[in-house]
Length: 507
Image (cartoon, rainbow, N blue to C red):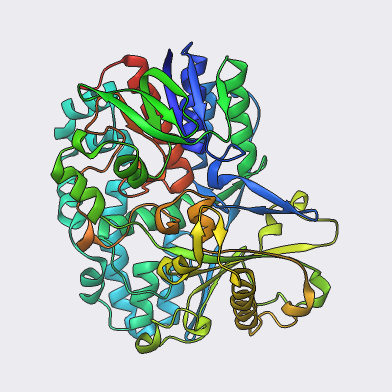
């Protein structure tokens, strides 16, 4: 009998597990695949170390604070990553400090100067209201902190009114009030070239992360933080079982009491905490008779973000011209034509993320080499017919994904001449990779969907479920990643541990 069983050894599960273990709890950590870290893990190809998921993260102060609370006494340093957009009519670094970014846009779009001023003025008010929302807003807190926030909520009436006003206002409608240039509206409304669909509050979270707080890379690398947490967990008696997927969560009188694995093992616990795909947990691991029908429908109907094609490249830098990349992260789109945008393999008309990954650390590549990560949105539905089972594919799958990867590389080569000849190592991930290795429904890569019109879930924090003693952590345990994906996963892991430690679901 364990105090807690944690399903999934991603960063949220590791944070929760380490915190509980340091407080004397007996914890079992079950992971379906062969390594810890989930999608924040890395893999090695001929000396090139590539990321499986996040490339960097925001709110390093939150990460450091949680690590210190759990007992990490080492030192972490962070270097800031910047982001550039290169489209048919824009070449701009959009991760600049907020006021400097505004001035840059006013210089590029002189005819929109007054509108840009109004957009930034109004959006700044929303950003100010949400910038520390996890410190005072009850919807983003649990436990005694939530109680305290509820008692002091009158002190934040102005911020509450602003959040309420903008939470259901689409960024598209907001930007249409002040701006006429379509490319400018897309840049501000999506941090890229796509149509704005998210709420203004969600947009404020994104700009707070991107421009004000910044995006950073840790000195111990992202996977190093996984190792820190797992080391603390095992040092304090935690038990880890890899290659142990969970089939079922046992429920008795609306309370989670344990799990059963696919190999028939059964484990009992006072608490079950899932750092796993929310839809998989609710819709596949629990008997639907145990859940209220409206809740099930809301989980089914609220969409996830989509998937992607990802190409990892180890390159000889002397053979390629990298001058167009002015930051570690470049988002490139050479054609902007909405009428043909549904052609998902027309990569010239798609927004391509180009990350100069090796700029973060010399340890990530062999001496004298560099590495790139290319990512582009890709619908899962196109790849599903290739899947014949768990990690099984139809004949021709490898050839087809290589064909698309080479087409993507040719598009990128428009701005990085010589890229094809510079490649020494190539690895390719498709939406099926994210489904079978990342354990994400339909290969989803970034949590719940952004479209404000399609959200059916009501709570900002989804840590507590309708089942007593069943908690969720990780990026899918929040409706919007208000701290960014990696730190919000740690944050939810820490909050879930607090619930277990206080043994109180009513707080």
